[in-house]
Length: 189
Image (cartoon, rainbow, N blue to C red; front, side):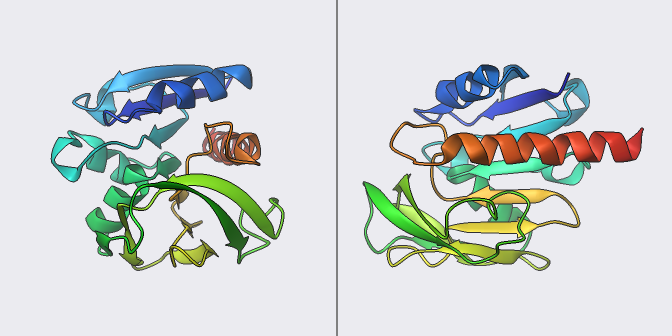
């Protein structure tokens, strides 16, 4: 069975990320973000959203340990900053229902989604510059970097919250991430 660890960065929807994964039949544990990666037995990591970069604990260490990582909102932003990209204030701020355009139909995380899909997200902060090795995989009129992927390292990020009911194809995002984790686990065993 695939095991996923959700690293809790104090976001208001973190428990919903764990619930969404459990609903897909996954062994999913919620772990404190002070937990070092070596103490976590999991096939994949979800870096949750959260209020600010000052409270991310050990989260950056998960980017270097070789497991697939899905960064959600703040999780994607810390991925960008830690790996050489940049984050800045969004032009719109707050939460909103947004239409996102999928730019990479071959992307293993979001390529299977409809070419335009509705999502729920915060725009207080957003990725401004992609880190080296990442591809822009989704964009919108509200936020130019809605999603990014580094398929070589299996690092993926989405600005939106796939775990909330307002996001149309959120379950598919989690299903695709689980497939990425299974494929990586099979390749390494």
